[in-house]
Amino acid sequence: MKDELLFCPLGGSGEIGMNMNLFGYGQPSNHKWIMVDIGVTFADDTVPGIDLIYPDPGFIIEKKENLLAIVLTHAHEDHIGAIAHLWPKLKCQIFATPFTAVLVKEKFKEKNIDITNHLKIVQLNGKVFLEPFEIEYITLTHSILEPNGLRIKTPLGVVLHTGDWKVDPNPLIGDEINSKRLKEIGEEGVLAMICDSTNVLSAGRSGSELDVRKNMLNIMDRLKKKIIITSFASNVARMETAFYCAEKTGRQISLVGRSMHRIYKAARQCGYLKDSIEPVDPREAKNFPREKIVYLCTGSQGEPMGAMMRISNYIHPDVFIEKGDAAIFSSKIIPGNEKKLYKLHNQLVKDGIEVISEETEFIHVSGHPNREDLKDMYQWVQPKCLIPVHGEHRHMIEHINFAKEMQVPYPVKVENGDIVRFSSDSEPEVYDKAPSGRLYLDGNISVEEDSQSIKDRKNLSANGYLEITILITPKGNIHNDPIITFRGLPIYEKDEFIYGLVEEIEKTTRTYRLGNKQQESNLIDALKIASRRYAKEKTGKKPFTNINLAKI
Image (spheres, helix red, strand yellow):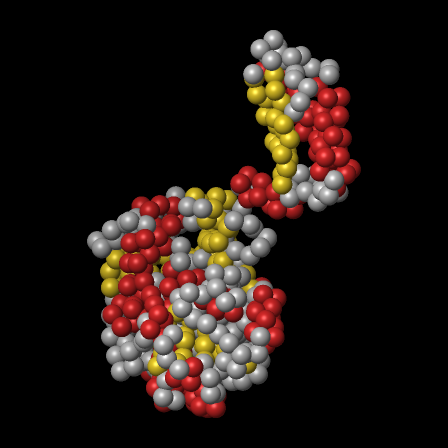
């Protein structure tokens, strides 16, 4: 049998975030695998109590003895966020460039895992040899330090996995996109390109960080009071812009928020931001005149515990905002966050603060390729096959159409779990399906989408809680005074509700004598039904109901 090359996304295809991609090579019954990225997405209000969601790696856990390594393209959470949660189930080597490696080490440190012997640092534009894969890191530009594409060479041909990227002619920090090497790779021949689809619906180019800096300087130059900038902490170029503009306008700068300090520290550790002014501690910054200080803080998406939200609610211990000050939201409004962000903007405006956002000024550029950027990449790489990833279905279908316009012979649409096969005697195709899904981080436990804990919390959130304790005498008789507690039910006449519920309980219990476990179980079921029916009649809610039988 002939060797084959496989590609299988377990996350990030059909959705934005939670990236996890597998490449396999070898005989059909014995592939060697590498995993590219291992990211998370963030939960919304539909799953109460859950913060992080990541791909279910069960398919590759079953083959972990053949998993050679996890290869990381860059340090955004949707590419590395799950690593400390899932690596203990895989226990393979990890490859990353220096900045990404620093942040990965921190994640493992929080979990008290010593990753030193497994984490391998790759220099920019370096190579990794994992037989039968030869992996070359290609420097790209994005909205974080050290973004990399991967040239994955196999005996069947070369795959270019772009990771997240854009074409930024002036990225301000870090190197420019290595278009020279990309052109060489294209001339050498590329079997397939696995490519970012996020901005395929956007015309033109995604823009440069230098242009953002020029406009930010103009804006800050005219502002006469305190300035609070909020941005994605991971965007070190934007961080450097805030430092630069503060210095040019005669201000000091202070960093606010754990993530902002963490990224600043990691960047400095890797040799970046060396020429920037030193930030001032927020506790000291309170002593500066309003017109002499800039705060750079977390919370650009209106996160409830983000620094920007705490500042706007006047509960931050070190930063106070007042009428006449300015809040600059130097970030994209991520779809789904509009409601809470507009509420935050409205509150600030109501309090007399000037709000500046991407809706009113040019203060943000995307880190992903618009259509003209994509054209550049296609012309450089000239792939025979295109597989779009990192996008919702609408993005990926449009990317397939775009690839056809760019005369790519074999565009292949995938979704999570699809297995694409490349072989020497057939066209690339989706030929099989791997099990895929989502895992939810519930506290510090990984649970599946349909876990009882999540179902119970949704029920509690929507319908409230009712608990009834029935007292039982030593002879098995039921005491007449049940103990009733409830939460989250819309009840105004509490005594009346309880009185009626007690009557229902007594009606139900009259026919029961408790001589064995089965009779107790039957009584509990009957009481649940009667109590929920009564609550529904009185409140319109069917609460999560718990029945306790207590012997006295």
